[in-house]
Image (cartoon, rainbow, N blue to C red; front, side, top):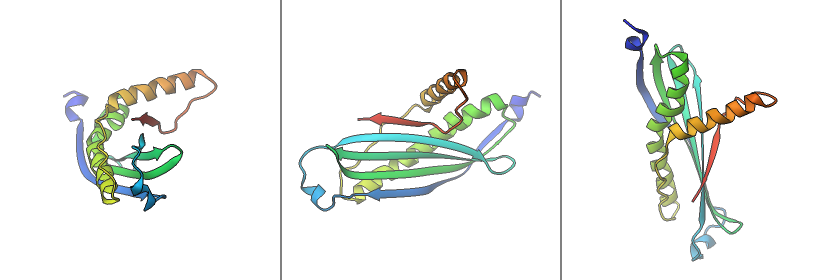
Length: 162
């Protein structure tokens, strides 16, 4: 049998690791008629914590501003425990950087929308994301950094504006 036949992947647990919401201008913020600009940041990290167990966490931060004033800031760290074994090292990085975040993102989207709605604001419905594109972007940035003075192994953060 080939190594691919012995590879296994399973979701052991999905959980909300951290969540916070700030509305520094409440209650006056609810009297403003101007629509805010929404800025979205997405970060992710993965770590092995047992023989075949990996924790993957995506952090989604949504900040709504009118001019320089912040209406709200909400941040959710959605995590999962994944059992992975028999996956070649070259494919493991992609699985942790694409597959696992793709599983977690819908839960983070729901948590963001729920927190914002509970705070009294209109719901924030985040658009679907391509973690494959983000992974490829991080790979290109890492290659460019490796060509430069040194290698950058920090977890990537991507900023999106809407």
